[in-house]
Length: 133
Image 1 (tube, rainbow, N blue to C red):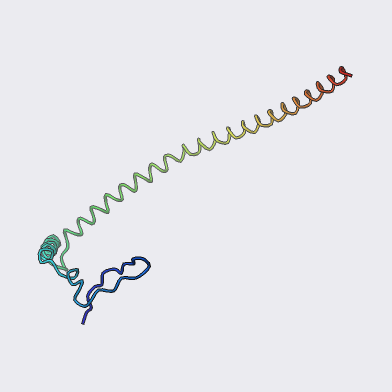
Image 2 (tube, one colour):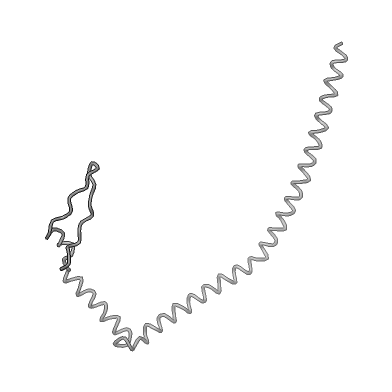
């Protein structure tokens, strides 16, 4: 004998609610006749489209073949776009390498200038101390 489907146990104030009593919750298991008719109609349509049974299926197979063909065309377009952009990627990498090289040269130049400025400031401070004495 099948037990009714229990409603989710709720917690309130840290205590679990009591499980449903026998007979409660059967409304969840009730079957809607309208839904059954709708499902039967869908099955009938699928059987008609498939050639009248499990052995047929020409229309379904044709639809699947169309979907596969469309998907293959889309995948080919993506592949072509990806490979054509490959040249752009190489050009971007070359620009990136060039920019990095220029950045390294500029950093070296800035470091050199900062070194010179420190020595000039030190020399000026020493000259000022000599003149003050």
